[in-house]
Length: 144
Image 1 (cartoon, rainbow, N blue to C red):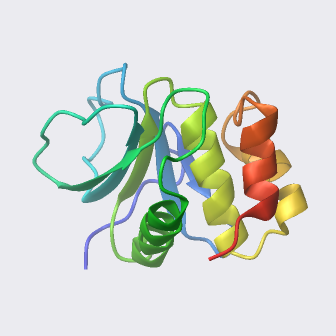
Image 2 (cartoon, one colour):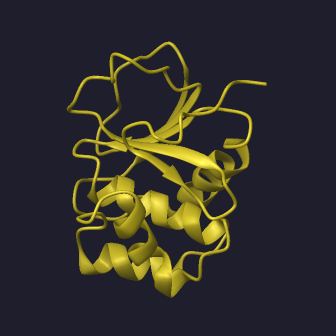
């Protein structure tokens, strides 16, 4: 079993169950004083660079929604399932819109009502998370 994230680490969201997941902006370097992820889902319009940990790429253009909604449910559900044993990271370019939306979907999987998941992520991760009306609507309609 892998050691999970430090709950006080930068960008680490504690879900209601106690599971930890890190959100991050890929435009910024990895924090120098913390561990690397062991599993990541990168939410980008183009393929991300190679990294030494297990990753999946979900095609998700900036300010938009996932190109393949079924694949999004599959990858986000897998990320949520892995949080107890792995250091799971969700990341996009800026770490707010797509990442915040994906984190809100994990909150829904963790039991947060869909209509409250965006507020949960804004309170506990980034007050600017989930940037567009269609991203908010996506979270309200998210179901695994």
